[in-house]
Image 1 (cartoon, each protein chain N blue to C red):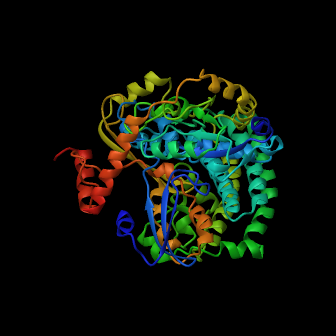
Image 2 (image 1 turned 45 degrees about the vertical axis):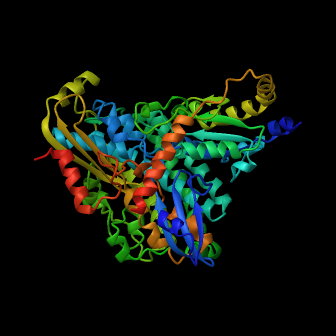
Image 3 (image 1 turned 30 degrees about the vertical axis):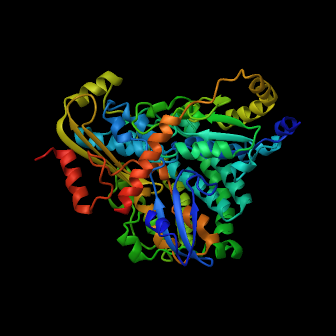
Length: 173
Length: 411
């Protein structure tokens, strides 16, 4: 029932996980009159708790890994995660860096990928609409257990908590 | 900041904003202490966008760094590669042909126009004026069309190449650029009217004052400094590229405003759009003929030329839309630089925020934060950790000592 309405008006929340801003301004550009996302009912909302779709850009840096996971958990089901840009697909030019925990599908489950550095606004819009339309199918697959399992990030999170603890200790000294 | 949390008690109300928040488009963490509606204290925690670029660059050759520099920030995607190529040219002693210098000026001013329009749109969005946001971003699309026409990309343009530019500007494209500039010039007065004379908007913009003294003390750059009456503009002072010629021929001056609040910064930016349109028209008019690259040939030739340079260092500086960008390059033979160190203007500007925000109302936070045009992805390239991962805060003298050691060896 719910999926039918989501396809008519997907509400999106936009997350930057440490990218260069290029994808973010293209996401915003998709909402402005030239591309006019609102004619499809696509609306940018201010909280992940209101969103149906997460638009995630950036290569997932070490410092935001815990936050991105929390945002994913805050988004109500059924939800759709769209990886925007080359960074969230495969880390792009930051591939060998020591403080990148990406790509995104190694952190949270991803349903739609949009390639490009950055992708054009039309591509982002199309991905949102295609994903929203394919949502019933995705949910059916999830029920049957055909989707790949959620990635295991225990190790990465441990590394992160250890790092934060150390920062707090050093600051208190 | 963590001390305040640990104390557990304070007479002020504490609110965190960030790291992922709709008013901030990038992961950045603000922590406010409030008394009623008034802000008493501000902490900033950065590091969310730290991607280890300088370390990455150590394994890349001179030309592979250009795309990395471009992705320091998606909005100043022309400024960083330009400063980097200028630094390499400075170190290697490559003389850039005059035509390339003019093309670079045109690209740089095009970027300034697009960035300032983008800022004005986001600023309007921050005070709840979404009509202006949509209108301005619609204007910006025309500028992006020209980017696409000239260099092939909307956001990442790949204009620069060591010793010149990657592409030439074709004769037949010039009328299209001029037409876009003409349309833009026609559309701008409406925006300027709304921002600078509409009483409702003006009252919203009268917040977040940065005094001239503070601007100098915190070494603010770009429109943030110029809005506080500091006459600081690399284009007309130092005069890199063809800016020196344009200044001497047409008498350009930095645009400044004395008030120091958000209104002043808005004024500076909107006036700079007009100035940039003017500069672009003049530069297209004066565009000299000739080659647009100093080194003929493709990648292997350029790398072979740069490989011969040993024991040289260079600085590239020019005015990005947010302020002065400085890149430092040290060359010690080999295919890549020995050290590459960029410094983005937002690093200076972000730390003027506490000075501006203290004493403001909570409702003013989005517009005051937006007023410096923060670009957090520019700044987060450094963490202060020593070899044993123990020390996190370094004093000024220690920092200087460490950076000297890193650059010059133990000597």
